View 1: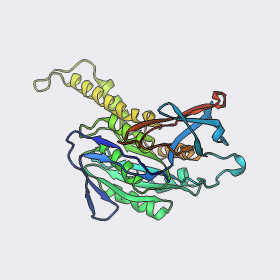
View 2 (view 1 turned 180 degrees about the horizontal axis):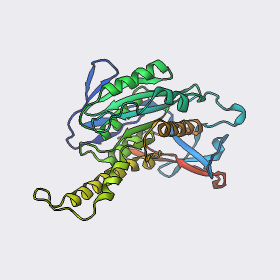
View 3 (view 1 turned 90 degrees about the vertical axis):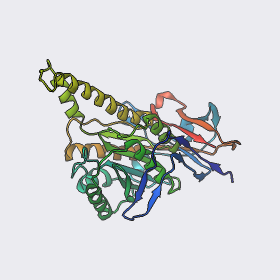
View 4 (view 1 turned 120 degrees about the horizontal axis):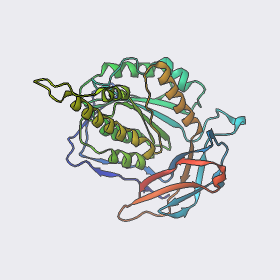
Length: 345
């Protein structure tokens, strides 16, 4: 059997090592100033969605897709996706994990942001039994509060732990990368999607481009939920003619300049979504109803996702990166979203 070593090495340019706390235990793992991912698998999975107008297209088989590696056609070995109405809700061979990554920094943390009743009613009820949810939180450090589960009590406890973990700092981009690696290290052929609740104001200088590279290597689409954008827009619109004072002669100009900078940073955070095969959410207000709508749309995405797999034909020495892309054989079927990832073998 062909052994593929999928290795991604992303140099973080002297980034300080971060501590990852897993679960409720006190086991600390010191991260190296780089990211190394090794997965032993001979099947490469590529997630995607197919829509015709605003409706998901179901029931497509291998003949509906074509897959290439570095532009060279490859034989598709595996396709799994939304079944027709007659098999609605049936479990799949490849399970789905929805990762909830919550920013618990002082400036963002809102108790009750995620309510277990909302998660249950908007996401878990009616979903296939093979879809599970994991919960992580981050500020200065990253914590996994529960691995993939459908157990309501475990999810409730995970949310309580996240609210109790409020802290300073916001290593948002490091947290996304480390969460993806931690999930991938569990192994197995699993389709994953990551939902990140944050204002996107990282307190380190890590580039969002590295997050995109990492997420695409893992095949994990990112879904940023932007918090606090409404307040920034409000501050930016106030401005008006500056009110001179002895201490702050340009207070209005400075306020607008800061708001524009924050808008730019949030835009960079939001762009991670479409660049990784996901999408971003920019709610005007945050309440249980809005969060429920977001979680409901994510549940729909999990339900309507396709996974296309193939076996790479060779292993390079030394290891090198390869671009994998999936297209529809007939564009009249609909429009394909996602379907791209980078692997190293």
